[in-house]
Image 1 (tube, one colour):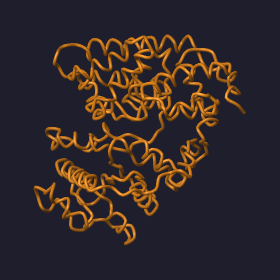
Image 2 (spheres, helix red, strand yellow):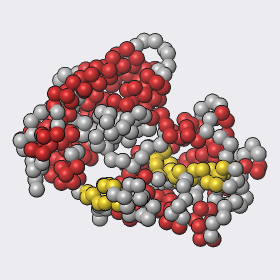
Image 3 (spheres, helix red, strand yellow):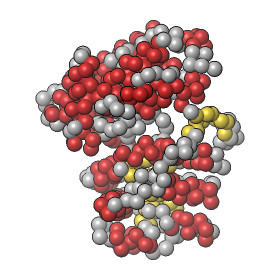
Image 4 (spheres, one colour):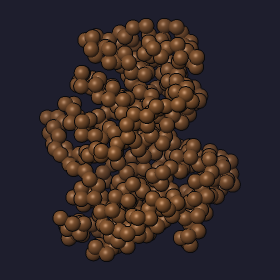
Length: 433
């Protein structure tokens, strides 16, 4: 099998005219939103509803999307982070203009330079606008011009494709600036793929790259049947094969440890505000007490009111933060991870699920935003994908430090419930259409 082996099969199911009509309209909606809402001079906050209409176009994980709707890609940005990003671009004219320059510039060399300039702005990283994957900038480019900019938004995926296709550009890829990588990889990848015999625009090329049998060829992944339930006995899923180059545990510096304790305290505060009792591991309590003190001392539980065996109780007792409902059941469990490997927190969640396969709780890894890709890689290891109760990646999601800090500042948390976290969690799904 080679890259072009499935061209005939794909051409038989792909309606180019229909797709062009759909994406012409969706791109127009993005243009209108950008020009009328983002670049306008008014000071009004962009409503969640207005943001969500565009998030739905940009992000496959956006609210309202399903298998029948169209979106650029899975952008690995939470709903809440998208909303903040749009409002910051609207409010911060320097940032808004920086992104606008990228979108409207025709000269590719200048376009790449404008991206590099954006990456020099510290405030851009705080709102998920910049990152080593290039996802957000690339998804904006693809929405602004879906016929010339690939929906393969992840630079990691672009490099894998270029390597598989034998492109000479791979030798220069790592040395290029982020702007040059985003612009050059887009054009070179399109040219390289067209040389295999696939004709059409960037949207069509992107969809072919992620056509399941094609994706298996270049991504180094495989699919396998998995028994989930009697009603849905067979489901195909993708598993990442671990590399020998995976990072080992790294020591966190003192500042990172202090930051993780602060986030641990914020999680306790948020849970308390929402009406939950809180569990913290006994060894952590003195440190967390410096940043969070419960309004009602009884909120911080001294023992776990759960009827599990001793081994399970011991495992649960070491989880960084647990929200407990009515002193009877676990609502949510959080592992705060500051080390690069991020593996230990995922392993603790896996231990809990392995000990209690029928347990139904929401689990989250909380870490700095730049650890999100590492989370996605680790949780998709085969060891976490063949569990009795299903894939751990279906049960455990990622929430960034920045999002936790934002949630902690939301007014009237006492009048909300934990469903609010759904706007900020991100699943481990890979960046594809």
